[in-house]
Amino acid sequence: MSSKITRDLSELVTNGIISKEIAQNIIAYYETPKTENSNKLFIIFGILGATLIGLGFILIMAHNWDELPRFVKLILVFLPMLIGQVGLGFSIVKNKSMLWKETASVFLFFAVGACIALVSQIYHISGSLESFLLAWIFLCTPLLYLTKSKAIIFLHVGFCTYYAIVTGFGFLAETSPLFYFPLFAIAIPRYLELIKQKTPSATTTLLHWLFPISLVLSLPVCVAQSAQMTYFMYMCLFGFLLNIGQLPYFRNKSLAQNGYKVAGIVGSIILLFILSFHDIWGFANAFSNIVAQEIVHAFIIFVFASLAFFVSSSYFQKGKQIRLLQVVFLIFTGIFFIGLYNTGTAALLVNVLLFILGILYIKTGASKLHFGYLNFGMFIIAALIMCRFYDTDISFAVRGIIFLLLGAGFFTANYFMHKKQQLQK
Amino acid sequence: MKKTYIYLIFAVMVIAQIGLSAQIVYEYETTITSGNVYKFKTAPVDPYDPFRGKYIVLDFEMDFFKTDSNNWNPYEKAYLYLTKDENDFAVIDTLSRRKLRDNPNDYVEVEIGSYYSGQIHFNLPFDKYYMEESKAYDAELLYRSTQRSDDLEDVYAVVHIQNDTHVLTDVVIDGMSIKDAVKK
Image 1 (tube, one colour):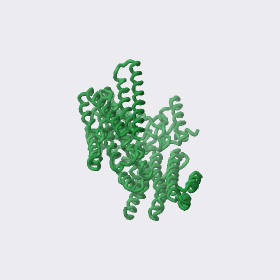
Image 2 (tube, chains in turn purple, blue; image 1 turned 180 degrees about the vertical axis):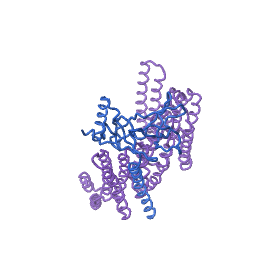
Image 3 (cartoon, one colour; image 1 turned 60 degrees about the vertical axis):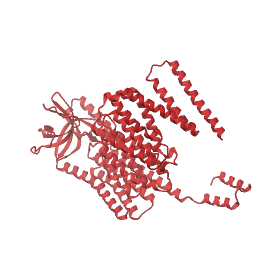
Image 4 (cartoon, chains in turn red, yellow; image 1 turned 90 degrees about the horizontal axis):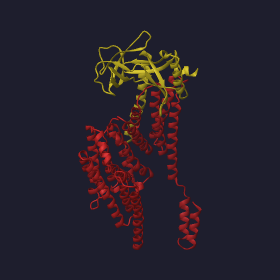
């Protein structure tokens, strides 16, 4: 127990705020060893240890010891996997603690990866990184459900994302959502299980970030080559994430605990700013063709976003005001179709949309006396004005004056808001 | 979840993990022991893989097939049928989109690159040779010096081929395995 608490307690007792008995109870509470916390710490160190050992083994074997005969190398490659399997089997049969289960699962995960990688090294198999990652993830998927290991959820989703990045990015990359999405979906029931637990944990909060980030990074697996379909799919994905972040479960959660909402808002706004440039629309239409597969993928993402909007707005939260950002993906769908025929109008509509969003946020900020909303709205308007500098030929002097006015606007709005807040107090 | 299901999933997972890796080992060992051995003239260069370590990339002399048919697409898969010359060097028999049942020769699956001036260019599937990390760069240097001394004929890859499997077992420079040549 810290000396500050001891000092404060004696002061509180002296001043008659709390009784001696309560002070003793508080001291007793702080001095009781926190078994749960120390267990958690052991588990974290266990996971870290298993991860480091697994990665260390991969690196040692990747040295490729020329002097060793092939069969010795094979034994060394299979041995860690067998040790991992025996360890995990033992922890399941004997129903050992979570420390055992987490450590054995993580160790086995890396041992399996090492085994596949090094067998292909021994036989000089030229297989691609994609096929290697896919085999690794696939063979370790059962670990998600065998021991209820939380670390495996992170490894599974992390490696699925790595696989999606390897397959989805790059020139002439082909669409490959068939493997990423089913493998990603397999982890969802485990995620929901953790969400249903009554005591909130840091793991669940981290997963609220990991899942949306994985989806954002992996979306290119749905794209063949078309830039305009990429924009549309991303807008729908951000709409989906934003609406998930509005579900009743997230209602009392802060932004730091709601990765869906943050990813949805930030992603939608950034994408709208990108699309507020006329050249972006022109370039997308001129240099890419839409493939039939992309239309199917975009439709599926749109349906998911619409469902998330329906659930978050009408079914669970009757009477609650719908925010414009929640329906931006629906409005953008209309703009997208206009943009296929008339890029100028589409860019103009995106500018109008951003302007309305900015004004609405300023209005909400002013009426709720909320500095966050007010400044966010002003940021949108200011950024919109700055972006338009690149489209038009305005002299530096005028640009400078506009910047000064914008800065002064920020100060004035915040000053009046502060005054108003103080008056209300 | 019921204990029985957990045991069942665990057993299936263990069998799949061991089975898949063991099946690869079995397939490649069988090819090494009983497959036909071919030599492919080549040139090595040295990059690395994050999981499998250092390797040399082999740039084969055999990388095109002369034909009049130009309806080939990049990244398409095709079957390259092979015969040998008197020194066991691989010689192209034919290139086909499908497996040829009446062709008794060995084949490997290749990836089509491009078609121009009557030649289909392709990539052979055994272009990585993993080496001890300290030796990969030296192997490339050794190859460069061999190239300068006009001994290119002496640099080749040894590949065992049987049915659908091929195993690259060695790269030879000047009559010596590249691993030993680098040590010298």
